Length: 255
Picture 1: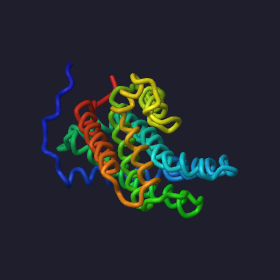
Picture 2 (picture 1 turned 60 degrees about the vertical axis):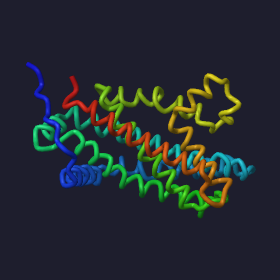
Picture 3 (picture 1 turned 120 degrees about the horizontal axis):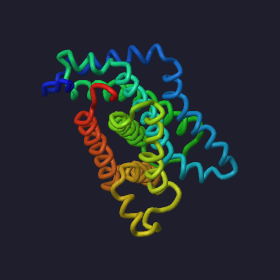
């Protein structure tokens, strides 16, 4: 017997906000997940600061980049697992049998985790700049903007890859495939223009590369530069594109 296909419904603000409220209510009862989301990026930045205690300039260089990378990774992990859990438990199938479209569902998840991403990014940015002494030339608010967009990108990637996993273990296995190559090629360890041309070409199409470039622009320049605006727009566009792909590939249940 074939699974009935949900009719295509226009995106609804009320259905989206209702979905976001439900997700946030569920997460409020999961203190371990909230601790992972809010505290792990801060703990990682704190450790990084004192790993380079004898070389503060190194922390300034790497810390700004990781300020965006850490939220992306944690949001990817939590979102992919949370979405998969809802599908394997049958919750998604019941929701999609109601007057709720895939777009409403994906947008609701993005809104809920986006709200958490704001808090997460604000905590990490505040810790790095005002407590750990991260020295940036530009405004800390621009750092916060890039960190927030990175967290939203991680949310979008997590929603997308959850459609291709049959278990939470498989969802975690997507991290080496989706996150690690971007981490190696984003310019964190070496300038991208010094890589092999083939790797540089690959890095040019990976969104994390532009997240790191955006952080570095804030690190070096007082005012937003055209390159910074380009980087921010690319990261935001990638997040929206992946969210659209996530809505298109969302499954009612795990086979």
